[in-house]
Image 1 (tube, rainbow over the protein chains, first blue to last red):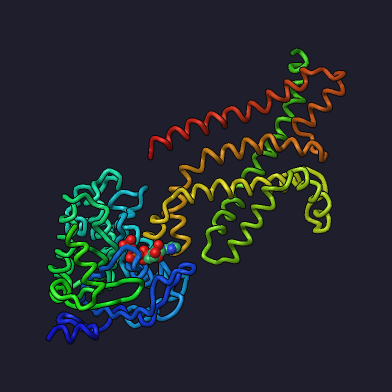
Image 2: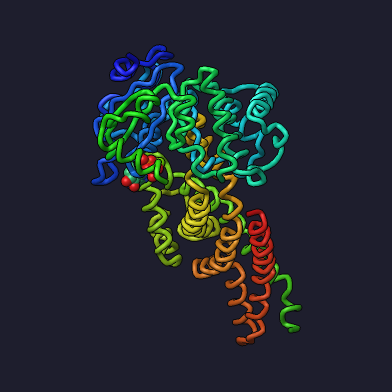
Length: 259
Length: 215
Ligand SMILES: Nc1ncnc2c1ncn2[C@@H]1O[C@H](COP(=O)(O)OP(=O)(O)OP(=O)(O)O)[C@@H](O)[C@H]1O
Ligand SMILES: [Mg+2]
């Protein structure tokens, strides 16, 4: 039954459409990286994006907050087309969190300053309020005791949790995760995934590029499989991992499962 | 040696002019260079092109030619006289700003793209991204090469001697004529330059070491 709903992008927990991509194309030179991509992410939904290297997963994330502009098609967030540039684009990005594979914490700022920079500069929150909230968030992701250190003094897992707190501090409508655990040592992966699962439980809308199938099974409402710049298949995690419909998804899954 | 001591006040006058030429040109070059570096990474392509053209043209033109050009062009705008202290400052500042822009730009390029992307992702504007995240990190690796640019500027002020500004080299030429070409005159001139440039070089070296530690 659920499979039928997934066909047109609706899942059990789904609210109203929040992120809508329609007919999105993106080229890098002659390389066609996104091919007529249609995707709807609903409020409160957790969508896991999976696919082989170079299939366009990162680019898909990055066109949503326009770190990469799409060549054609439309991207809307909460009903508003993503502005082309300037202050309007900055305002939209404040509502769309992003967590990177390489953490990208601001190297010259302390952990606390990393989390307060956005609220203070982009939201004009009073510094004292921003710091109080930042400490609450750092508590929530379990790194409050590191608040006054520089990022380089933290482990990868701690840095990534700070990066999640930094995104949360903006009260985003949706958070994009681009392989958030791929740069981590194995023993640190779970501390980050646990934070993400908790976020999902709290109803955060999330787009997560990851090969962590445990996370997909625990937290995802829907799995989107990409190959060659196209969305080849969408299904519930259960359905996708046990009975993928496309050959390409089957090949991909058997390749990563045998590793 | 006596000659240098006897003419100390003449040297001092020349030294003062060279120091002022250096200081004013440095301030102007830093300001213009910083703007040009920012434009070279601006989101608008047209701004990037203009800034790149500015930097490449000035960086690859002999300084003397910049002076000659100013001598011909300046009077037409009626702001600067064809010759003189401020015309020399303008030439030196224009020329040096191109090197400043390059030093700053390479410092900016040394800051990983991920830093700017993270800053854009939390909703900072282009100006905020530069001010809050990119420039503070770029400055650390930019200061040593900038000091080298300023050392070159100090020595380049001597070109102004050929354009009626009596700075150190101009002073040296006059003293030399008055003292039948005694080579000690020029030793005095060289010492005056070293008084400015050697401390700068030492500063650059010590900063370079500190930046290396901070990494
Ligand atoms: N800035 C860029 N310039 C040129 N080509 C790019 C750029 N970014 C990505 N590409 C190319 O576009 C294609 C899709 O890249 P993308 O990073 O979206 O893939 P991906 O699915 O995230 O892969 P991975 O699993 O390796 O992260 C790749 O072939 C990549 O080499
Ligand atoms: Mg990727």
